[in-house]
Image 1: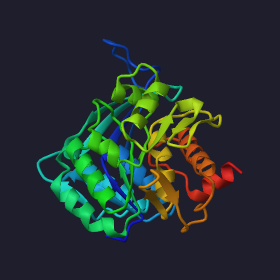
Image 2: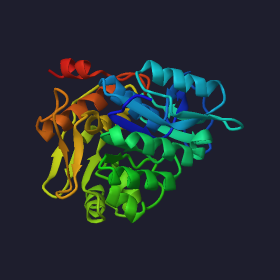
Image 3: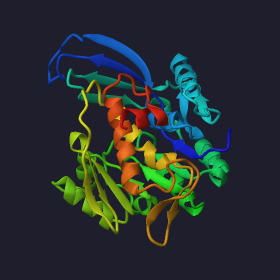
Length: 318
């Protein structure tokens, strides 16, 4: 395993993408326009996104001892991700996602967790061994929740920045997990689900009140909202021709995790980006703008692991 700048503990799924005339309605049977098989999973997407920005990235997770598992390992390795800690499990299938994509790029996703549900003590041991040289830990909710809770606790104790994409959101998160997260990045639906609030703005405020230090609310075509002790600001999104929204939110999350000098200031509750890359030390607005640009570039390209490099995002948005 390399000395990582970013650790990603999360899911690896083989995506089966069905392009359809419209998203299926209840009881409806339809023919797909095409069927594509691509590597994905929120954890794998985030790892590939960080590696595309030339950040040392280590993936922690599990796949089955099957062809899909080899596809996932090979695809991540080709993307520049260290996959030495991706564990193969016998007797269980690699996770899969069945994705319907409409012509406007909107999608519905049904997950079969497979090996992702077996992520546990082995991955936590690998995490503990790597934390001493890491700056950022990225988490999602496609692996067992208790593993995320323990991983965040260990990372915070080691002074590592914890970024959580709370998807898929199905339940209220434990207070301890929220307290250990430095940056939470829900979309509007997830924020409402996690809090029970009817309005996404109110949900973001509630999450902050529950102990989250920085809430970044992803609002699709309307950009994002940042909430912390010093800011309550909205940021717009660039116009793009949408091909697919798959992977856009995962790519958005890579920007705070990409700066190898990112560290939490636990006294102020803010994340500080120290020297280390060209982007280090730049204003937070630039960092959020870069996250938007990278995420929205994904919207206009097929494939959740077809991710833009640092240079591509800079060139296309200059």
